[in-house]
Image (cartoon, rainbow, N blue to C red; front, top):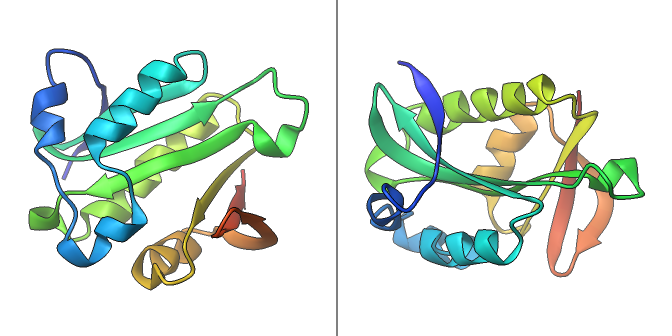
Length: 149
């Protein structure tokens, strides 16, 4: 299983927009199309990627990289992360998360932060197993987790 992050572009974005999470997860994450729009509105910090496995697109992720932000704990965010419902429950998400963490390490991030709703128990389990810890902070209605690198 070779997981890679591929730059999302005008050439592959329509394929990415077709990826969907399971119906019981829709409440936890924006659609890939809305995420792409957010990336375009935040081009200085947003880094959108398609997630592929052995060349097949299986998911989407987007990071917020703001190296000029004054608070070093708020510079690097895992802003979006999804695996298409047809690939869930097969280890792809866990494997992709390790590739994502390596990306942050390779780009000299000191930590990674993310937020999600407390009811998103499956995602929280995956994040916590990867070493993310609750910060005690809230981002609106979402709890904030951080992984120190």
